[in-house]
Length: 183
Image (cartoon, rainbow, N blue to C red; front, side, top):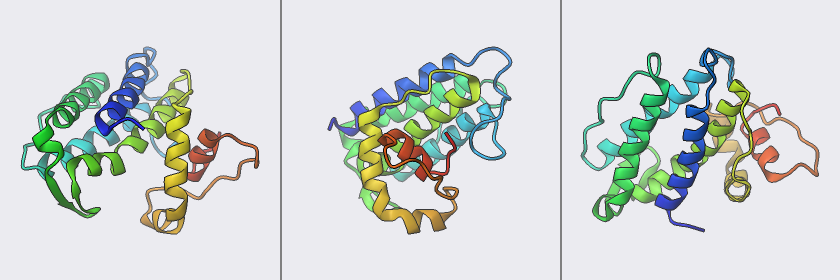
């Protein structure tokens, strides 16, 4: 599998296409995450990612546009800040100490951010009537990695109850259902 910077770029580009493709008037359409609208998907990503990754290596969180006023600008600003981190070999190799444990910044981004990009790309596409196709190989890898952590992840409150899917469902459907999304 590609390195974290390459994977981030591919997954963030997929999300960016959905962000840029939101039709006029659709930012307040309901999203698959209970109680969220489309702009909340972007808000979630731009609020937690820069706030975790940049301070973890001693950098300030950049000022970003508000997801309320400019969700696309907010996403593209957060994405640019994280790509800059991933492009700096010194920064990605730095050790971090977070609630997720001790690891390099690159490992932290790979563990906490990549799957969020994929799943929330689907969320935004579903909310705004866009193409819901996501990277199938990434979905398969995330599913294999996440399944052993079912009980711990479920108790964290970050996922709703697993949604049943047919045994012959593809790994993307199984991953989305694992995270509590109804297809």
